[in-house]
Length: 188
Image (cartoon, rainbow, N blue to C red; front, side):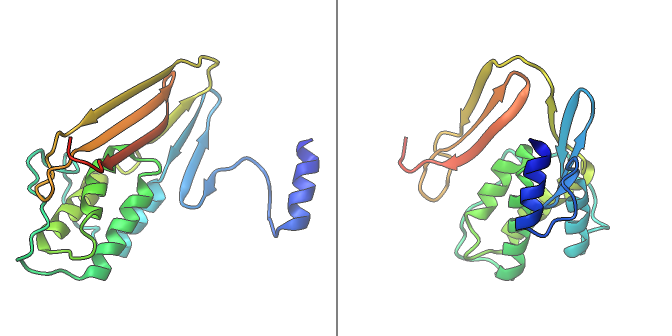
């Protein structure tokens, strides 16, 4: 069955091999006997190089509790294209790094009119990654299927419209299978 699928795919698409996956679209897959580990260690190193941030210090968290990120109208404007490129790179990292989801989504809200404070927040997320570049997702090979969900809200902390941001994650036993961070559409 696998060989038939491999033959069909190689006839339809230009492919070098259909062996065990180890690297796909900047996502690294390490398959060990008892688990699978998904991470983007090489991508983290590459974005530090692309944005010339190799010499930055290390941060202990991606965003301070009292971050003060607001859509300030005044303030020093920042290069929109560079800011969007950094935010886009960080958004792609959330595929294997749910720990930066909230901070990245918060910075992504203000891509149309970035200022120096927003750029500092985005850089802090980047330098947080420098301290732990190889974090990722572990998927143990078990037969247990207990679904657990966790959620949290910040209860109207947006300074502009006082809407809440919610976050949730779903686990199938000990495997993280889904996560999200979303600004609510209405005031709670």
